[in-house]
Amino acid sequence: MTRNTSTNTAKNWFDMGGRAYALFRPEYPAGLSKFLAETVGGRGCAVDVGCGTGQLTRQLAEHFHKVIGIDPSEDQIANAQGPSNVDYLRAPAERLPLPDASASLITAAQAAHWFDRPRFYAEVRRVADDGAIIALLSYGVMRLAPSDLQHRFDRFYSDEIGPYWPPERKLVDSGYADIEFPFEEMPYPEMTIDRVWELGEFLGYLSTWSAVRRVNEAGRDDILEGFVRDVSSLWGEPTRKLPISWPINMRLGKI
Image (cartoon, rainbow, N blue to C red):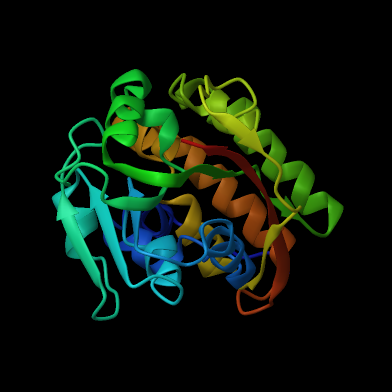
């Protein structure tokens, strides 16, 4: 079924502000936080740096006595939620407002590519207690079905908004394989994020991308309008649920 999509409709999908992160960023699988907790025995304090609206932070709270989510964005912190053993602090990754030797686990989920990593790593070593672990997490480009939807998405991702991605995005696309990581590396199990989404959830997630925001700022509404039109036609009924997955990549190390 083909659906007509107006300019205003496209703008509505892709201009949702900070609340889109809380609404549409995918949750990590429960097994991820469980695995991370097991690597340090679920003890002490976990610190989630660049926490955004707390997708991973909340899950870590099930396994640690105390969890602290840290993000430099006031908007992100304002939309973050968590149970009573979670505190959110506004601060950059390079100046963690934590005491020395206070953290058993330091995570950065879909965030480390934005950091000044040498300064961040110096802070990691300062706040880590004995036997602490660092985990830099990212999830790769989404996988869609059916194949015609995947092909249209690939063209949008690589060709149409590709020039608007910041250089740091290449580190995410490589699964952080090219990121400097001066710690004793540890293995981790293969994991994916799996969702079944309606069209609105899919487009809402895309609205959180930095490249999409740059397209908006550049006044290239035609790129977004064309994609919404095409993907809506391929999707069919907007309430139709389709499977979407992301591979989880990790750099895991002993500090």
